[in-house]
Amino acid sequence: MADTTNRLAGVAYLSVDGQSYMLSGDLSYSPGSIKRESLSGQDSVHGYSEMPTAPFIAGTLRDSGQLTVASINQMTNVTVTLELANGKTVIGRNMWTVEAQEVKTQEATFEVRFEGLSGSVTEA
Image (cartoon, rainbow, N blue to C red):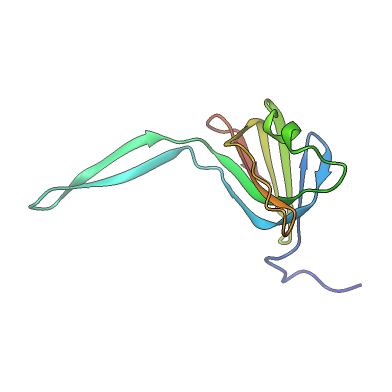
């Protein structure tokens, strides 16, 4: 068996409510719930503004023959689980999909983005 103690990136798995999906690539996530923006004047940096932002999990999935893309668009209140190459598990609870999914038929891929309330994405 290969030693994976130094593996940091690469292989990843995504499931929604326990159902695995083919992950083509571009997997990303953000557990953050605050977005800050510096406020500059003509004389100096004055400080920053702070606004809430939705934590997210996003990626490019493969459109298999058994999948209906419309069912992805209808997902609300789902649990999204990521298993990453570095051993980390990322869980998004009570999430929903945003944006309409558009399939690119040359590679049978589509992008999906799940968002949730503050604190809905955790890392373990």
